[in-house]
Length: 448
Image (cartoon, rainbow, N blue to C red; front, side):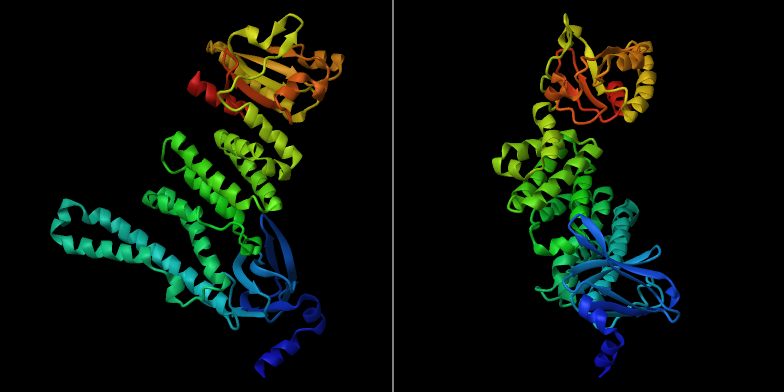
């Protein structure tokens, strides 16, 4: 009878349109807007929103076909909910007061909250015990060997504890799939900062994940897993060559797993590529590009704009010889016989103008310090008068054939945006793909 009474309180049109609701009472959130946000792989979108009434009650409908994880948000407070196409009730004082939250008819959400609390306690105990091991290995405590043994045994117990089994979570449930992945993500920062011995196990776990699992679509985990994993690899404290080996192996695993899902492969490749460029992981970007463009099947599903960007990394990867450029009727780029910062820009490009101010400052500094490097600026201007006006006082070498984006050099260097930079040695070997003038200067100070 109680369930029937609750259902009758939900307006009929809401039940028919949305199929299910999140219903509850939160005493400290009266009159506040509340929303529910869902996921579609990398995207998030609003599932529903309402305003909590004067008694703290709310009824928040969500689409009847949606199942997975969603974020329940009030102002700056939020919590995760597992939605399974059923009505969910919760009650408490404040959304962030987890001890007060009670899920009346959702076993998975109750267990998810219990597991989250248990994980937090385990993490605190683990950190404390690891700290104690450092103290008890001191000679001062040599007579307390038994205590140290007990501490190590408790550390091992926590490492091997399986909360899914402890709380008898069914293997076919969403929580059984979701909880270990959420734990892997939350552990990553501590792993590379304090517990580097766990890195091999975390890498192995990542490379066993079935990224084609349908649960991923509405989990909100996809971006966090990828970004967290590569950030952990980047900060694993190994030589750069070793780091790139591990990154490339993980990239290969992802491509192999996703190659049967064209849309997801395309989106993931784009996101990975952006991540690598943002963090200046150019060798990882070059490997991703080569892997995708070398495969006929993969090439067919990658968007044309992304293919163009990747082509630059395949043909113009670090260590390759860059194409020679005819600067004038009698002069080529190779005639300079010195380190060159090659810049592609134009007078009508706002970012080019802003970067040119920095370039002028660094160029003066490089010349004052007798740094063996020259700047060659290739302009994509199409009007001779505009070019001459813009570059007549530039202290570096500037060239333009007024063909704009149809310029041969633009095609050969796969320039898709301005400004674009290439740092070359005197033999035109590519040293680095700088992402900014500041990046150029940092590289020069460290290498030249």
